[in-house]
View 1 (cartoon, rainbow, N blue to C red):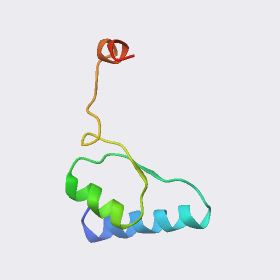
View 2 (cartoon, rainbow, N blue to C red; view 1 turned 45 degrees about the vertical axis):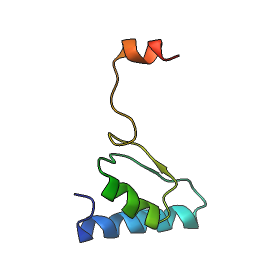
View 3 (cartoon, rainbow, N blue to C red; view 1 turned 30 degrees about the vertical axis):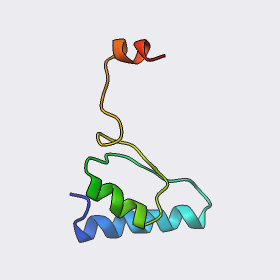
View 4 (cartoon, rainbow, N blue to C red; view 1 turned 180 degrees about the horizontal axis):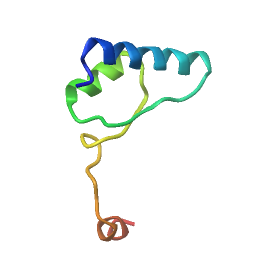
Length: 65
């Protein structure tokens, strides 16, 4: 779970490093609203994962274009 203190410390450090390097950070694997809120509080601007967009088959992807 992302909100475990050790995991959050790692994520926060990576976000700070990204800021120091003026790099965009994309957080992957977001599965819950709680995780997304915690990452927003840290200043993450980009996220992807099951909560944001569920996996799709090739047929579904091609049908949506």
